[in-house]
Length: 500
Image (cartoon, rainbow, N blue to C red; front, side, top):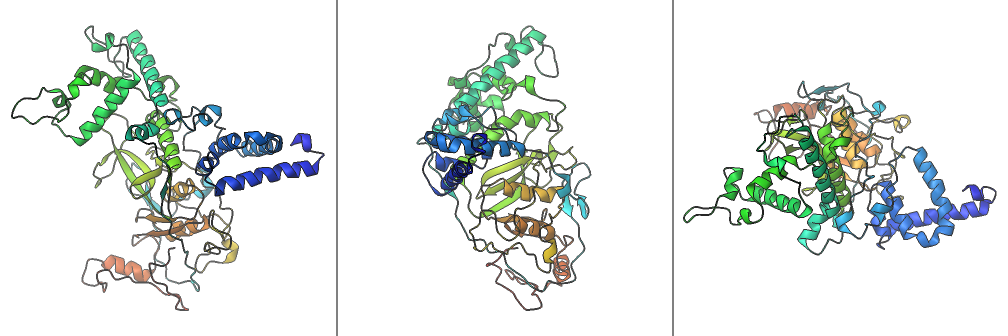
């Protein structure tokens, strides 16, 4: 804008053009403008907008430059440039070398571990601990979230192309190169792994020159098949079929010999081992997975537009290797593995965060900024149902704009919700997260919430008593009965018409 610093009219015209284009991409299904609208990463939107309006550069370029200066000053993610943009219509090359990890720095002012405790002494996952409420508010304003169904954008025409949407050829080519560099390093050092176990003279690795893109896809196909058709051992899949003996329906041996499968399975590296930072806050095992993880999340955001009703929970990724970052969560189908925090809808994982059990705040990896407004939902309609919804029952207006500090585990819910496209959501959680503070915080961020509750999470004393009596003869609840605590003005709505 420096060239127009003395021409207020032209400066205003340029900025107006940018805002019009910015508003247009939110309203239209014109590609690539529509593509920009469904990308939550601001720099991806910027890249697509540059492409969409490249013919209007004489008007929009000055505005973009000013916007970029402001954008960089705010410390946002780095710009994702031409190499990603040019691949917008090439599913096989959608990964970006500039894509940054989802995790960022936690702002300590929004984390408060008072009134919480760890579930396990060696894990930072926490639950809220509050005394029961004894009073009630004088006015209850339900947060009405209009039901929206999820939408799936146009998919590639074949299952293989859809698979390559999530694992593009360009990314596999990187894996092949990483593998080549890694195998070369092993041979030069005469070892077979990063623990420097010596390589024997007869080791198959000595003659192996690495793998190829086609072999990696075959290897992945074999892994998927193994997950569907169970055998007693891995080697059983390569046993020659015999009459009267049930064997895998598809003969894997004609696609890849067992020794090559073992070499790829052991030495394939989906990361550049020379760029792993041993001193970084993010454990190296998650650094290794980040490139593909970020790509999957970015692609998911392109094809899946979430509806209104979402769920946040902890999930386990089965892992039986050596890293210390594995977590044990008893009661899960796969109790040992990597723990992640997920926001999902109808089984589709939209966004997730790694759980770092050695970190102070564990799961929290995203800074929680204060909401722009406490009276309107994120992206809600002007004058719509979100208006005034952030007012919690019985709270003074003077405290409405103050950020609500949550414990580190509860903060994950807000962080994941704010990673989605701007809209008003109804978030469902279990009793690991629930508390009045969390629900108030979600309302301030423009989201409704529903969740189960522990007796000690700060619920009303009558509900606490009923929770403690649950399962005994003292409870007066009948099956499918709902009990509510009315406000003094007797304002009670049906439970299926509102959320907190």
